[in-house]
Length: 336
Ligand code: GLY
Image (tube, rainbow, N blue to C red):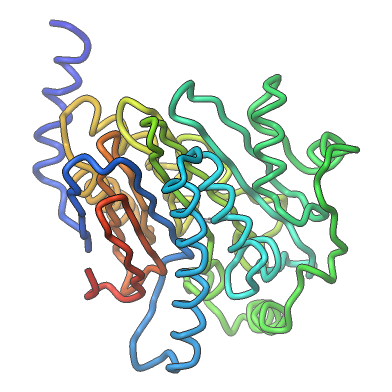
């Protein structure tokens, strides 16, 4: 029996028994371009968020989505669209990436980021950097250099060297709300499982007019992280993946579980090998994460330009747009 047939025999029944998560898919009849973005998934109750705060998130997400969509509409690449969205969200202190990233146990900054292109599956990733204003651009530099895929810590900072990457002091990244969150965490007022200490990773996936897919993810990780902990976001296959034959994926949530379930690559495999759509494949992997004890979500764009969100939390900051006129932002699980 060919290898792929054996795999299908295993995958299809497995998919049938896994439970669906919150999901909403858009089938745009082969959109010429499409984009989906996220700003983190977690416990988000309507009555626990002020109208002002909800409006601030919506405005930020809409601005990032519109900037990415404009690039694709004008014939730009999925890579540029993803980088544009992520650099905007990295600068926005509302999100756990770049400026406004959560703080480490010692009160420092430790950014992780990755990017992957579906055309040739080139990829770049960095972890544990603290001086680069836009960590996603350092990940892109690693990809463009091409000798390695994943650099970390001092080595990644050294690699950044005299490349044209804007540097920033630690103070630039630190916000009072993240300092308060760290104080609560250190005083053990926040459980390790609590969403608050790891909320707000950002990511984007896109398909451009040429049919090329790209995915990127950027994060500060978890509040109070120690021992050079690295989550799923910079791990190609776990938090980020892109393959023109199947899909592009960016994940957010409890990184340890997303690593163990190899979420992003597995979604692409389900689509490639079983013919599943992005919503069903996303649901299956989020169900696996849940089964292991984790929570979070994914954004997916398929080779056909379909977009999907899947998450098992009460909310995920998200948005999507395509060439067929879709342009929407969502926060809570009951919004499609
Ligand atoms: N998903 C982000 C992290 O766990 O670091």
